[in-house]
Length: 86
Image 1 (cartoon, rainbow, N blue to C red):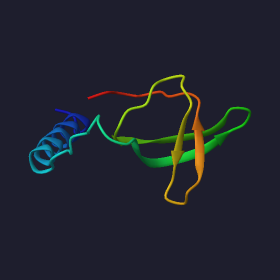
Image 2: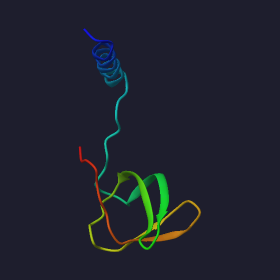
Image 3: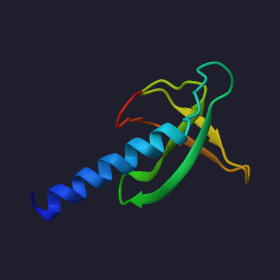
Image 4: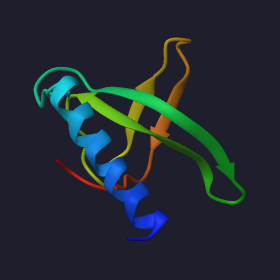
């Protein structure tokens, strides 16, 4: 068995152990839209890209929403993409 295979097997065992200990919070569809921001960066000619996790509420694609941050700044969301849905 190669070193890479052993490392992969140990990583899978580690993740399985973590998954038994850590409980992921459930997301609520109802209520106000809350979005936890992970990263934001500008793309020239396109605007600012914000990545993160929706904690509660819902938004719709291609409809402009206003997001208020803790600093009371507002942003218009003109597009929405998701990498995966659980």
